[in-house]
Image (cartoon, rainbow over all chains, first blue to last red; front, side):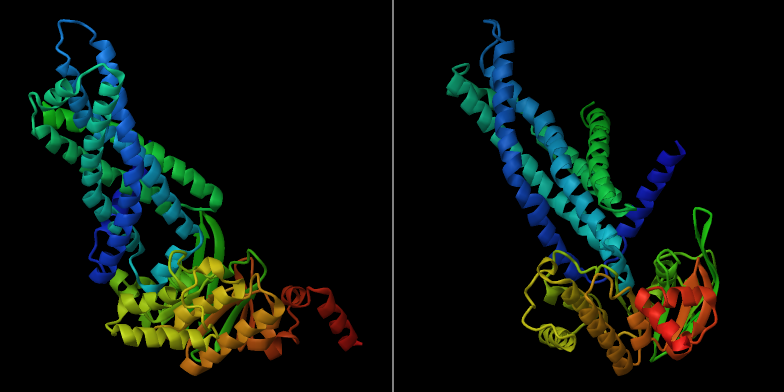
Length: 247
Length: 252
């Protein structure tokens, strides 16, 4: 318990250091653009592939679980849309990004720590925490909502292709279903969740990388911890945010 | 000038440095020597503020460094350059970007001026036509020289080198030593070098302190080191077989 509180305290102390005034805004801007490509743009591929298959599976499972003449088939499209909007494109995509982006952040910063690159920054008088972590936070906060929107769109398209190809729903019913009783707030809800999750992934992973003591073995351990802790905190916040935003 | 007074440092209640008092003179190459684990790196990192000390004072000219706040330390750090044991070049940046980094961060120079300065520093350390290479494409000696170029890019008053020769062949090691000594004289820097290489001690050591188990055991010049009657120091200085043979033949 004491160790947990100590880590909790250290995490907030690190955040305080991260959110201090940047030395040279232009250097930070360049770094943020670089991180947008590295952490954001480079994640479009994996998010697209996963979302496509996620949408496909949701449609097929919804179809097989609602094989009843009482239910109109357009409900398959509606179910697919709401599942993707409410849960899959924000939470599941965040869990996948925690694996990809989180481990990358932890190992990058961790390697910089064990090879004394962070010490080199400190010696120069650079606020290393801010220089290394703030651009990553800004990049993911800006880019991840776009990833969520891509995920939603691709997921719905995946569901449509799978549903019509498997013959469980017609194209007209699916399109009618995804438009039926649409609540635009669900998109806002997904984006709000994404912003929280992006912050969690970046800061928790950066914390584990930044606080490494040791060598390459510890870099691997920190990377694993970053993914595990980010995922647990994402799931915890998923419950809290759902209760706060949808109740 | 850097003065250290009664410095104590421990990790998890285990004392690493005990009552270290020493002054490092400006324009001279000051050496901290000792066996591995004697506390050299901890002392150097304490002096530059990478480790918080338990007690004692660290003075940079007339400023008590260890009592300064973050902003105060930051101002002094802009006058520091450091060469790390593993070079600590930024992996994702090219040679040119590494040397340019401090200039981007702390100067208002134009792009052209920065490029000129980068090229000057790289030429000064004999790195030519390698501006676009990444650190992973450089040899150990080249990495050290690029790290020196980065360290001097802002004309520092204080230069710190943590085992600059480790992992280098004897000839490259001598070149790095000579470069450090030349730059120290050229820029009138206060240079502190951590080493356990006796070649470096004899070649560039103007003032030397010897650490053993976290305690300062001896202080003097490279001329005095061979005549010392300090047994622990002699065990260290004449540790290799060649040195032992030379010493015994000289005695005879």
